[in-house]
Image (cartoon, rainbow, N blue to C red):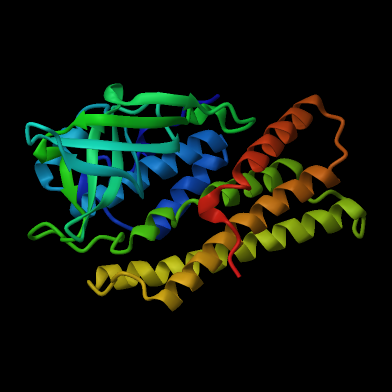
Length: 307
């Protein structure tokens, strides 16, 4: 597996970096052109950084992102923050397929609301228990595990309230929690674009391969443009300080666009693989890897088809 440049860990310096969903999508697409597992981790790491940079205080960001620290996380409410017998803060929780588990310095665990406020807890990865290592067929470079916290003591300064923006902090792009997922289709788009570049349309006009290639290319372009157009709109609202949590109708449309882009591109990947008849061993290996990656990504619960 090729290691991508450290510069792909976007937003390492926290809230002072540019915040753009479109830039994040492009970054993930470029990473997927080299390695889908690296792109998946890029998406998770940078989504976590963007989300924390919206709500976490500056001293926590400085501590979390110092040096070569890697921070991965989840926005979903998989944990519960409580008080132990001595009054100390403790967290219980478990999330499946915590991406980047073996690379992480810290994991950010979303918790159930406390007194109506959403919270996230920053936890040293070494203190979390591995319930199950992910042994799926593709994207193995993500080293995803089912991780749990069992009455794990946490410091108050590691608890982030996710309902109010810190003083003098620009309103981030993650005013709604589900915007964390906005760049996930970038992995599927980049994977499709990688195969389109690798295989090419061929030289025989009207051939079955050229027809299959043209269809996959058109679907990938439309999916990317549709998603990018929506994200441009959210970026503009964020810059104007007008991005807010989604109303139910907007949330449904957002999910539909995200899911459509994700599955259209994965379907394009599988169609290209099925139609290609190359006997080149190198190409065959790349196609086999892409098939495994697509099969692993397709059933992801966060990208389930809507409508």
